[in-house]
Image (cartoon, rainbow, N blue to C red; front, side):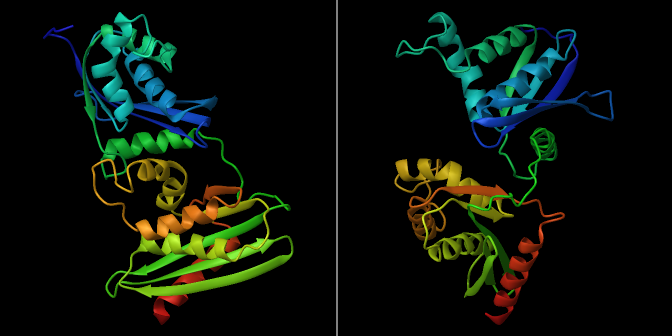
Length: 299
């Protein structure tokens, strides 16, 4: 559709899922030129994937428009943007099959999105996630808010609970890490420091040193305030390994040597990762943070 005298609108979309697959949430933010306040739509599914939530967000954003619009859709999902702009026409020509004669994944949502796109004049844009874009950040927050809130730490007496924290003194480039370990009524504290380091390195070090003290092959819960640590250990590492420890942009992975140590440790245990919100953390996270801060100052 290529028309001129139709209303214009901008839509920011995002999806979230944790674990993936698992409970998911989606969000769409509509920005109309003649309105000061955005319209926000969000929803959840009990069992889904991150990619499905990205597609659902875009489909619902377009579906909310009762009449044809010129739409600029912004997403941080390359899967969504590449699928809708490059792969979709070929899928439709092959009756929703891949070149390998297999059914297209998420076919139902791609078909819904294709139908919604046909109603409008849509322009698709990719925006880097978690990079300070106001509306991308807002869409992410709305999508994540749809996920069920699990009370942390978990009440699991048959597992080791490792609470990790990091501290970084920017001017001096000194850092510290702290760990509180708990198994039933037993606790242990660890901390250490580095010079010429970074906050991200300290987060990885905290997990490494916690795992290095484990002597029993039982389930482990690791608690951190760092999305970077959790996502690196659970989402990004397979891609890094497949690309010989290069990022998607072909650059060397930062802290490669630490990630390799961490992945070697996690492969020996059944590890579950949990990100603790920075507001109202459990007591153990506060104690681990104090350990990290004290270590950084001593360094």
